[in-house]
Length: 255
Image (cartoon, rainbow, N blue to C red):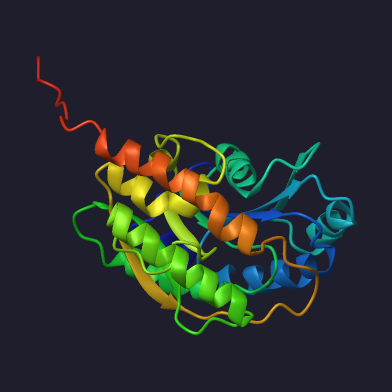
């Protein structure tokens, strides 16, 4: 299938998909990840790859520049100081030139081949209500502590928000750029994107995806900043969900 036949993705500035990857001190993972994304998408969809360097102190920016020599679709955005994953994702989405966004973690644990799985689910949408497809890591390749903390956090979140998403923390997501830019922006918002999209009246589905062990670099998350810090954010999102606007306006034809 050639890129011009891809549906229902719409093209903007000749692009159909923007891949946004927040990275912080992931120099060892960048080249391999970028080449995998290129292999997964080339010839199938018109795309760009936006690496957002969130205040790295290693050679991440240099690795991205070197990758661009081989993969011309690569772009580099940089934060002068570390601002967090949510801020990095928003920076990438704001700079993106396509109407649809895919996010992946910069650690290489998401398999870029699964982007096609998410796109296949989007193509099945017939009413235009589907605005987000979320990966569900059915076989987590993490330490037992990270698996347990994520399981607890997901159960608490689902009980309080009822978003029907089994793995909202999965880094690989496909979503509509316009809807993303309508949701409230705040630190750690990336953990609650399915609920926030539902707040906008959008359909959200989850699909099984692969998960790989981290082979290079060091994780930036632990129990403290993945589980307990999220409780405060969860209460705030619950407040937002309960106070979402209920009425939807329509334009009258004056012709």
